[in-house]
Amino acid sequence: MPPGTGSPPDSARLVVLGSAGLADGFSLIGADVYADAEPATVETVLEQLVRSGEAALVLLETPLAHAGGPWLNRLRNEGGRIVITELPPLPSPQDYAPAVDDVVRAVLGPDALK
Image (cartoon, rainbow, N blue to C red):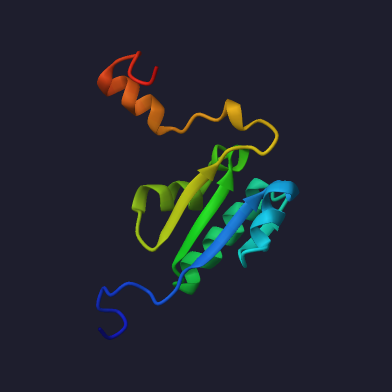
């Protein structure tokens, strides 16, 4: 299919923003890493991805994923060629609870995930 006709991209970037310990591991598999990134860095990277038209899987460590921001909120609401997901914090993965847990509990009841 010709470009612009809705065909999937040939490749997508893997972009990781988080603590140095977490991000550095992803660099070993060729990800674009932004170690010790701040929320402003997330916004800059997301804006660049939108403006470039690139497809990407963006992995954000929990504090960055919860920081919000205009580009982060926009892309989460839009969906499409830039997919954003959250990674648990490296020092305390046991404290991680995906946002979908709240939705499951709301629909199926408070004991649904026990």
